Length: 191
Image (tube, rainbow, N blue to C red):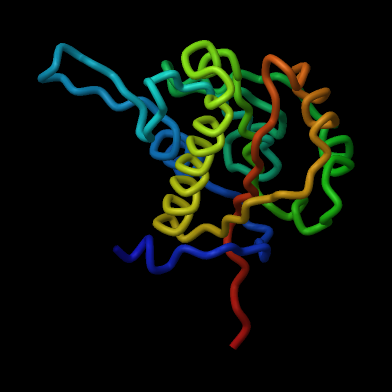
């Protein structure tokens, strides 16, 4: 209840890094796998997906996270681990994909992509609607986890699609960016 009532968009981030444990919780509770031992280790994700197709992929761009080197990563949810894709210097290139300078103060941005055919194969054109609905569930999970962890979170609508796709070496057709979230330690409010 408290996480929902405190949920808000915040563009004010402190210079304090996000903790590794916070990054882990953000990824696991926003997009990870949950396992039911009583059902033969049956797994599902922590968010709904039309037809259980799960087309979304998560790419954390790490700026300031304790114990994690800066870089662009892919979240491998089956092992709850990060796979390094790009090492520094990537921040200057990343910032060119946004027209808002406040983003570079975040501890990390989470670029969410969709592997479109996973859903379109079953639902045809209606699958696009399902993919965007699914992104909304994931974005809300990130917001609620940020709220629970006392972190700032802001969804970013203004970005250069092709620039981010190029950075991730994806074509924007089979896989493409559908949303971005910036998360960071909250800036202390002055009295």
